[in-house]
Amino acid sequence: PELVELVNPFVGLAISGIDSFVIDKILAGWHPRMFLDDKLSTRLEKNSQEFERIQKKKRTLELFPNIGRNDRCPCGSGRKFKKCCGK
Image (cartoon, rainbow, N blue to C red; front, side, top):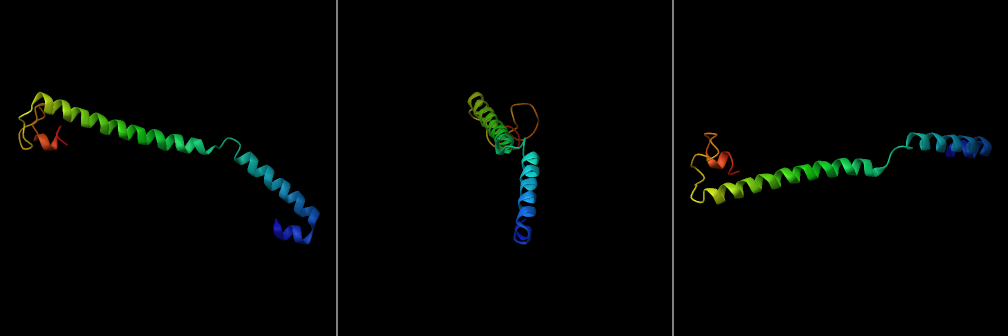
């Protein structure tokens, strides 16, 4: 639009107005918060899963205080504690 404004100011104003109108219509429903909400919800979900995992490990250690990392997991999976609930 700047080059057109130099050549013919009236045509430049018309193109500038159309350009603004088109951009406004494209971005009408867009808001930065939409993207932040998505990222925030993903991050909150990840943090809540991490919190649940830590709480599960704490409960297991409270119920079985003498369990070692290389002992079988008390949940019954058959895996070692360090590879199962002890992660």
